[in-house]
Image (cartoon, rainbow, N blue to C red; front, side):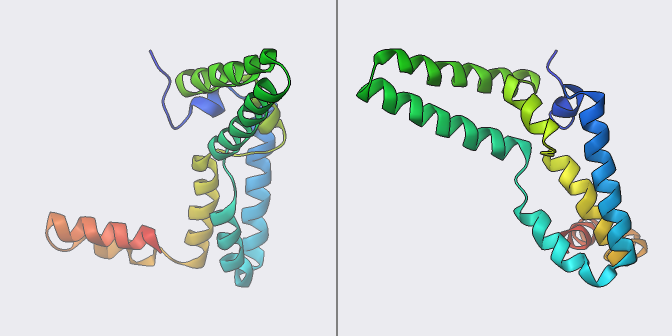
Length: 153
């Protein structure tokens, strides 16, 4: 069976790396709870933070392009590099793990879900979800729209 999309990277990351990432996230949330005037800036930073998927894609594309270029210009043996990178990407897509994941996770690169955890905690601190009690009013469609509007802030 294939692992869950939302937790496959965390499940294939060492406990220590996951702990460090969670600790850093908690420290950030504590800091911004003490400095609420800086939450907007942090939310902007989170919008630009590269998650593990984007990091892997950029890394794989760069290495593949280098391998293809060297294969064409220097020696065909270099074409093994993009072949290997493609295998790693497939492995990551299926399992949520490949050798570069270990390196990037140990460097603190987070999943989009981990970034969202911080984002929504900060939005809660900022008071974005104060109108949640009003979601229960109206038709199913109106309630769904209200819920989406609240979390889009």
